[in-house]
Each structure stands twice: as structure tokens, then as C-alpha cells.
Image 1 (cartoon, chains in turn yellow, blue):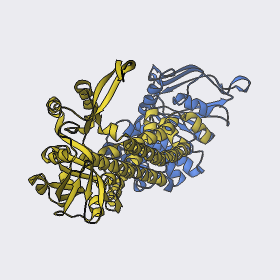
Image 2: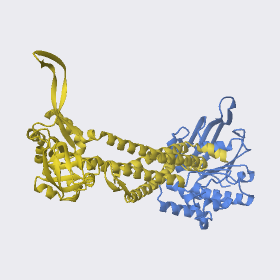
Image 3: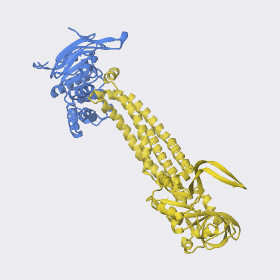
Length: 396
Length: 230
């Protein structure tokens, strides 16, 4: 019985701990990518294609029959009109117009091609956690004039740049602007931290020679979990491709989901084994207590009374196991959250990330309830079927 | 033995038949047994092993169902009663004393005696008071908090008698209650059983091998091969 109780306690505790970790990392990843790339992104415009196209070559004209369908044209041509349309959606919490392109940063030590993102800071802060991602310098400096730069942490390290340093930023056509590093940010996503640079939208348009159009929208939502529904609804009405963060990060989200499920299944086997142990204990107990059961039945205890005795005992073990398991799970989760671990890549953390969620405890206890109820109910039912006369006759 | 005044029988069994096994292995244990027991009466059934005494007792105690025949308790036909009804009748109207006392070893003497009372719906306090009174009557009050398996054979059987009488049943069914005791303890336990049952107004059906004890009952029914001898 003690082994069974121990199994329940550790089964529930392990379940809670593994779920707290896997969902903790998954949630942290979601917060990171939502805080960096937003809940939705609009980057392409739909264009209906098909029908007969005429091509002129020299003096001759050719008519080409193309298949019907939809093509994607990169960028947004009329951002103000589109912004007005998107602002009508009550789920939208912010819209940031971004001009993306490749620029070269010439620092004293070396130069590097970077992924430049021209933004209006005020708008971008509505759709990202950029303010929280600043590790050196100040956003106020960036906001003060059009010559500020925000550099990814690893990019700044590679170029040996610090806030206040001046660098030449060169566009593909050779246009050059001397800009000042206002701040350095760290998202934790290494691909972003080593390549991304934010600069003012107007400056980006000048350097990239794109005075209008070609931008993308990063959109913030009040409830990011609704992104797929809102994206589908929006896409149907604005003739632009709208990508939710769930679609964009599907691979990673699937990885976390599989990890969470597989750890739940693995740990549930501990509870299952405890259930089998409990079944054995109760089956043996019913065999040993057949005489006592017969006596109780002769005194007027019903079959239900007899089975309830065993169910009650099972319930006590289950309740004790559930309480102790939840307590141990909570303590272990707290302890694990204090373990230092340096992770950089898909997100940035210096300690284990855990997620405190009541549902982990309810699921752990729920699984234990199912297994233990079966493990107790079957022997209890067998106990209730004991025929008193037969047992007493055999015992006399 | 005292004269039993004329009154309607508390227990009536008519043409009870019972057998064990199936097909060729079927063996008839009881053959058209009829019996009546009056309120307050002590009736002993005596006979050799295997003659069907205990089987009859279990049928009368509603622990088993006869193949045919009728059992009435307090004029009510109970032989075909449902499982639930039979269980309730056992608690309300019947008390059992078995040869090996069959106390629950993990419980104290007091708890063993309280069990049927608790099942009958008595509060813990009332059940304890009643159980203590019975244990006082049976000279066991000093050992009421002792676990059942820490009592001697005679003491255990006295606790079993107290348990059988706890709900003041109409009928006490005793199956070889002294079969496991020496002569001195047998007489003592028998006397206590009869005396206590009379005080509670209960009738007794006693199955025994012991002719001396059997003859001390109001009525003695010798049994052989599943029938009462004429």
C-alpha cells in the first residue's frame, strides 16, 4: 500500500513538473516571438491572374493563355488605406508599418550586411516588446531624431558597437547615411539578434530608395490566441495575405506540443503502474477478507456497503496521494525554476522556465483518479459479489 | 425448561428443499424440511456432520435461497425476497453466532459489537452505549478496548454473542457456538447466550453436535440426512 501511495505521489508530481517545464518553455517561446514579430503579419497583396496575356516581340504579337489563379505581390502598396481598414477590427491592438530590406553597416572594425527594419517607434511599441528587449542604451534617443539605430545584441558585439557610436549605413544603391547607435536589444532569438537592425521608417525609405509602398504590417492583437480566426477573416476582406503567429511558427509550436504530449504519456505510465499495484493490493485484500466480508453481509451490510468500504480505502489513498503529489509537484516546480541554465537560440533565458498552471495539477490528479478508480472498483465489485453462506460454510 | 405460551410463530419454514452441485454431481442436502419457532423459544437442531443442519440455518438466516419451499418471518414471506430486502431483514431481525466467532480481528471488542448497530443507523454514541451494556452483561467490559484477536476463545465467542444480540433481533441463529470451546466454557457460553437472548426477547435456533446442550433447549430437533427425525 505504501508503494502504491508513493507511486501516486511521484506520478502526479512528475506529471506536474514535466508539464510545468514543457508548457513553461513553450509559453516563453510564444511570448518571445509575439513580442518580437507580433501576432499577425501582412506582407503580400493578392493579384488575380489568368486569362489571355499579350506579349510583343519585335513586330509580332503573341497571345498566351495563362491558368486562372491568385498570385502574391510582395509588399503593401497603399498602407494608409489598408491601415484604415484594419483599424476597423476591434481585436486589433496596434499596427506597425515596417519597411524591410538589406543594408550594410560599416563600423570601424568591419562591415556587415544586416536585415534592416524601418519602423515608426510609437507604432512598433504597440505590436512588440521592443521596450523590454533593450539591454543597453535608451529608446528615447532613438525617438528623438531620425538618425538613431537599434542593433541586435549579437550584431553589436560582432561590430564592437555601443550606444552612442556612429556608423555608416549604406543602401544597395550606394546611398550612405551616418547614423548613431541609440540602443541595443536582445530578443533571445539568435537569428534576429545577430542580423536585425531597426531604424526610422523615413530614413529606411531613403536608404532603400523606396519612397512609398513595399512595406509590411506587423499587427498586435488584444488576444493573440485568436490570431488564426482574425487572420482568416481579415484575409477574406482586405485582399492581402495575413499570416498568424501560429501559422508562422507552426514548426516550433508543433515541437513543443509533441514534447508536452510525450512527456505526459511517459509520466502517466508511473501512475498507471501505481494503479496496477493498487489493483493487486486490493485484489489480494479482497481474497484475504472474504471471511470478514461474509460476516458483514450476515450482519446486514449490503453489497454496496461492502464495495464502498474498499472504494473508501482506495479513495483515502488516492486523496492522500493527490494532495502529497500536488504538494511535491509544486515544490519541485519551484525548485526547478531556480536552477540556472543558459539558453540562447529560440529564446533567451538564464534559468529553467516553468509555467504555473492549475490545469497541470487537475490533469495529473484526473489521470490518477481514472487509473485508481478502475484499480479499486474492480476488486470492490468482486468483494460485493462474495456469497456469505459459501464463505462461512467453507470457513466452518 | 419454561413453558412457552401459545402465540403466532415468529419463524415458519415449510417444505424447504436444498441441494448443491449440478447434473450428476448434484446432491440433495435438505428434503422438505418444515419448522416453526415461537417468540422467545429456544430450539436446538442436533445431528451428525453433513446432515444439513448448517445449511438449514443459513437458509433460515437468509444467507442462502432454498431450491423450493417457504420461509416466513413475522408472518412475512421472505424466501423469495429481493437481495436488498433479505439484507435489511438480516440487520433488523436476525443475529448470527458462528462456531469460530468470526470477529473482525482489526477491531476492538466494542467496535465489533457496535458494527451492526451502526449499520442499523444508530449514532456512534448510542451504538457504543448499547455495545458497552451488552459487554457488561457478558462480563467483558474490562476488555472492551482490546482487539478481537487478543481475546481468548471463550471471550471471543462472548463478544460474538453480544454482537448477535446488539440489534435485539427477533431470532438468533447459532451455528455450533460452543463447538470450539471446552466443556466448562461451552456451558458458560450457552448459558449466557440463552440468558441474554431471553433478556432481549429473542428466539434462538441452535445447531450443535453436543447432545447435553441440545437437550437444554426448549425444543430439540434431531436431524439426519436432510430431514428431521420423527
